[in-house]
Length: 230
Ligand SMILES: *Cc1c(COP(=O)(O)O)cnc(C)c1O
Image (cartoon, rainbow, N blue to C red):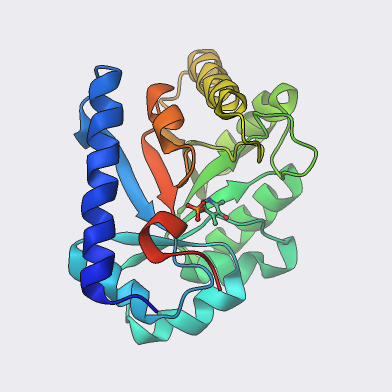
């Protein structure tokens, strides 16, 4: 496992990358938030993120996150970024501040019912397969409007924006197209339904510059901060 000093050096380097990418497209770097992704890394790195001043971390599996959470007693927020099966919806609503990976109406309705039973309004993002990648979860671009409409009818869900994962491809132009698509889908849905959908969660270690150029407001970064996954 890396040391806290190594982690801080990685954070400094990441902040430089974000500033350079923002400068290159005339954006203010403060519009771009970083979500450290702690999946597969030991719970200690969540403490690193907290010590460095991050207010949230991302995990992709409910069970793995549940094992880490008791060590931090609510000091930090948790975001679920991985595919969620509806049989784990209640555990997710009980424990995650935001669920970024909502990708079906079935899951939406389950989450809404769980949130209602807890008297909670669950913050969510809708995951869109903006790169049309058969290997990725997420609703198709054409089905996104229907999913958003269903979400807006759920009194115990608050839809804050959209999330996507670019296809795994060494050609970064593929990622750019995916991110540009997500932004267009957002602009279109935002106008159609008169909702802000202000969060655009897109960009990871390898493609974050491309995501920032296309309007990302939240980059999810694992390996660049914590090293390659075990
Ligand atoms: C693992 C993961 C990340 C972080 O990926 P890195 O390439 O390690 O930065 C981001 N988003 C999701 C959905 C992930 O599962």
